[in-house]
Image 1 (cartoon, rainbow, N blue to C red):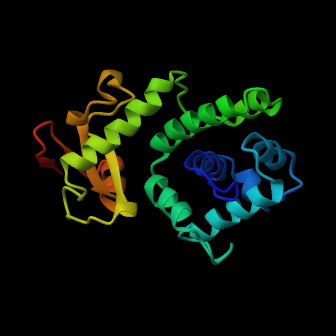
Image 2 (cartoon, rainbow, N blue to C red; image 1 turned 90 degrees about the horizontal axis):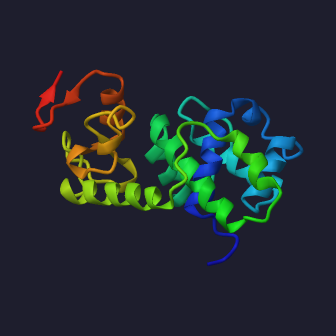
Length: 203
């Protein structure tokens, strides 16, 4: 793989920076110390990271700024995690841990951890488990939203019927999973509806 190709972990860490550190995104300044620190952590140049932040700014629904060209991988990460803050925080933490294992000797590794948001799980098996959860849920629902049958991969999100922050033991249980399109997942998170354990819709 060419080093110019961004990895999923790099996309996740950068998206978490964009979503959770808005002060960094105000001008996407490659000379900003935090941008330089984050770029060093993921072994990217500051101007490369600033360009990626500009890409996410372009994807923001209310924004008319940013750059026009957006890679398919970047767009898919955005569509999967935008308005899905809890999952983004969890996955971004795991992504940073994976990046840290690659850059274990880097001075910036521990400094960048201050950027982290959400729950931290240092067990590498959790990353494998969560990835397996998503795969099993997608298979269980045959890669289609359980409410509207949309099957576009970038629009589908694996969610939990019972909140994983309250039911830790069910975090990786596909029986506690549901596959929803972005809009239905958002509506569910807002409490507009929920799904019972027997998969009945409750409004």
